[in-house]
Length: 243
Image (cartoon, rainbow, N blue to C red; front, side):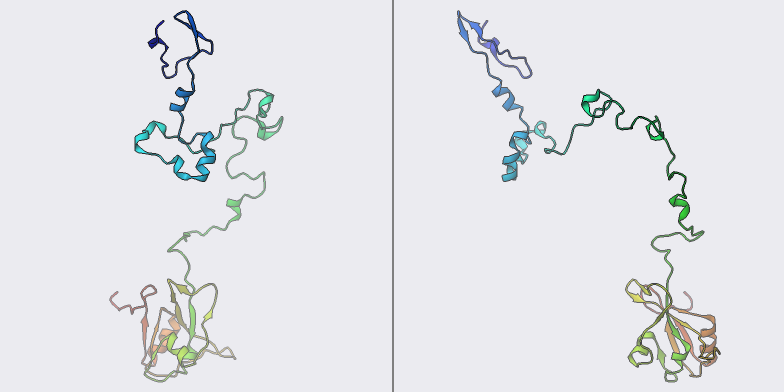
């Protein structure tokens, strides 16, 4: 046996017994050098050093792709079920002894809640009105005709001008928000007085700008020589008749 035959090959079995070499005993080669060469960057023995100095685990190009491995604790060993009672999940494998949920296969269909009314049947169905962005109902702030009667003739009326002149304090919001993309949505509507009689518009030549109008409001404004101007809810600009 020569000294070259004692060279340690990667992955080779190394005996702990002494070797007879040239009539004298020689110690078996150590495995420390071989194991240090195959040590990974995130070896568990270097976790404390990595916590103090993150550069310990930094990968360098000269290390090669073979040194890459998972971070400590990121991958855990999977549970081996059905391999004896000493493993903790050996007998029933976590499914118990009896019952519907201990049988093989899926015991119930998706959405089943034990016989009670399931969630997908308790929820209301909006037929023809899908949910999500672009399908939300617009709730307008209401600008009534009785407010228009307080305006000056042949003037331009908007929600902002009514607030500035003190003709109204706030919009009458029916339900929900009236702000769409940062803009206040306004709708001009007809109204009734205290005796539940329809309020008639008496001011002439008004130019009313809003995002929506009711048919009764449009009829009264145009009958008094006024004009209804629709505003774009996104840009706030006037919508022309040809659009």
